[in-house]
Every structure is written in C-alpha cells, then in structure tokens.
Length: 104
Image 1 (spheres, rainbow, N blue to C red):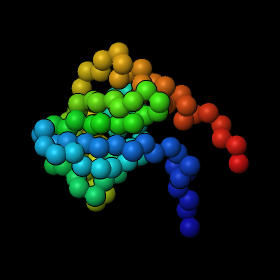
Image 2: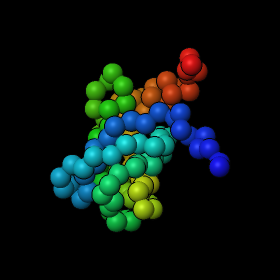
Image 3: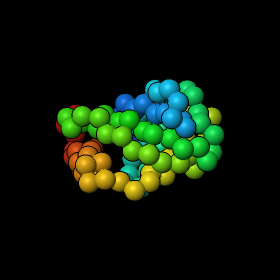
Image 4: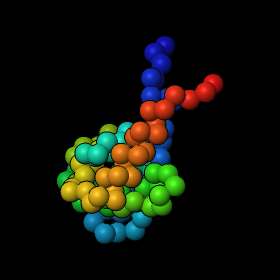
C-alpha cells in the first residue's frame, strides 16, 4: 500500500468564509504564498470568493482573500489575491518553520 509522503506535513487550523458568509472550519493541507489547499467538510463552489482566516503560528490570525480554483470530495484550492506585507511575512515564516527537521 502506498504511503502518503505528506502525512508528516504540518496542517494549520483555518476558518474560511464564502462570499462574506459565516465562518466554516477546515485545515490547510498545503500552503504557499500563492494559495492554499484546504481540507473541509463544507466545500465552496469553484469561482467563489473566499476569505481564509488562518492561525499560522504565534503571530495571531492572518486573513487572506482569494478565489476557489478547484474542488474534490474533501478539499478545495484557493488562489490568493494580492498579499499585504503582514500576510506574506506570516506565510513565509510558517513555511520556513514547517521545513525544519523534526526530532523523532
């Protein structure tokens, strides 16, 4: 049986709001400064505008707006819009921290 190489990858808790609606829970499965892959029970439609509210570490909550590019049964991809300096810095720090070797 194949193993998922991402099983040890960090997952960040996230809430997201579709078209300025109520906040829904999920987890970021993959993250970059361009976008995110989000694992959630409720999935927005492709093309929807979303706001992603993420706890990426000790810097508090980061809010990023974007558009849903694709969906599967349990995940969706968000392409972020322009990032402010705070948001870009928080994502870059979270990515650097996730690359650090972990002790067994």
